[in-house]
Image (cartoon, rainbow, N blue to C red; front, side, top):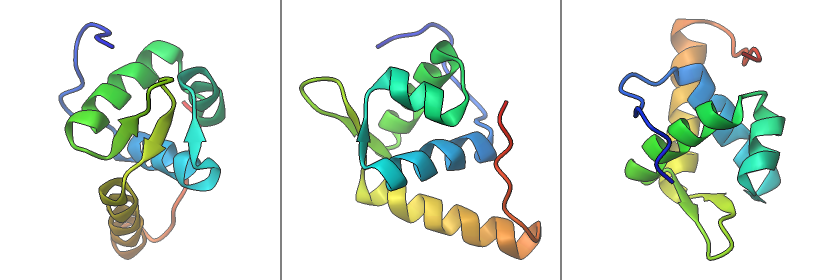
Length: 94
């Protein structure tokens, strides 16, 4: 699933949006996840590669994406941080 240039500094709101959708829907294919998050397919793939490397997501034999326990905890920690330091959680579509 190599999509070219890897993400070196991911946007935390984009990460949170991807994880939020996976938490809500449990399991999705790449196209459905791109649509649900409002990301271009190419950009989503780059984020998924980064997230897989951090063990936030995993892929099954059919290529569907699921959130790991580590990914779910990361989302909870990230939302908590955003609420504490930013004051509200908004995930604008890009």
